[in-house]
Length: 518
Image (cartoon, rainbow, N blue to C red; front, side, top):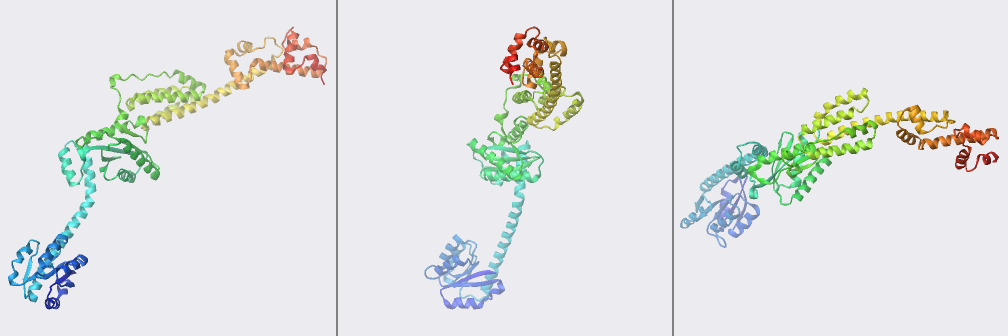
């Protein structure tokens, strides 16, 4: 229902029009009356009527002044002006402010109702147009985000899109960039993910960076792409990118790799997009979850690159011996060298696979086929870090198996040496060199190291201890055994004096003193 305000300084006219017009028949309501323009303006500012029926000639503020004031603040309010015949020239002035209805006094019910009908018709038509425009804007608001996303896709992939398209669509989308300096951000979510994750990281990025920085955003394949204004402070941008990643990881327990292009003109969008894709390829070397820029992937010309050369003989030797500490450090060094080479992904794999096979050959022959079958896993590795982890884990397993095997083998040899020592206790030739050359046919130095590693003592010390323990046993058992007899029996030959010296050093007293002791 439309609200009507009646303004006239003559009370009789106000009352007459109020009673004469059937307001409800026109879907209207008389919401108030005023005696002059000043009262009317105050009422209008408070109640905002749709239609004002006003006399022109009034004290304080006349009708034309009221129309001018109201038109400045509320141009949608319609006026019907009342005036005598001599004041008709005022109608020309009123028309300047959009007043279409000017009635001469005295006016009857028909003239007023006719003017009311015309005004209401105009208002309904205007309302229909406004409703139509609101519906159009509502539909556009639904379509506009999709249109923006599609435009960004075309901008970075369509060769025909350039400055002209940017000018047209930028004006349509009300996007303005100072000096047209922009950058592209490309996000790649790591691991298995759903579309909602792409939508989430896009929203997080827009919130963290701010609407004033993010111009457009879209998804292309498995990537999220943002067109942003080029920020002067690169450190600030990197801090915000880290915040985006941390926020996304906190909510979804997933990581994302970010590729950032250099700043450039908007017409270079296709070039910047290819740049971000190339940055993502170097995720193979820099690892998942990195923030990669063009500086990270810049390298020397191919002609200046040196061939990657690595001699795995030393590494394989330590794998064979089960020395995991050395193998672990050497593998870390190998993959650092490979990462520094920055060669093609497939080419780098061609270097790793032979190394892996060389390591596998150092293991148990019965298990080699199982390790070789794992080579098929290399196709699934998208980063050098994943390959390093795979090779390291398998090398560790082979090293540990070899270590256990070597330990068992060493223990068997040491047990033989202990048995030989007990059996040959009276042999003057009993020594590490004699056992190594005459019985076990092994390198004496290597055998000595094994014995000390297993028992914690030198073989010669062990033999002395064994002989002295046997000597004390014989003295305690017989009581009158001769020193020269003990010396000969325990491998000291015809040198009882040396035997006595060794015995005293071991027990703190001579054989004779030991025999007399309690």
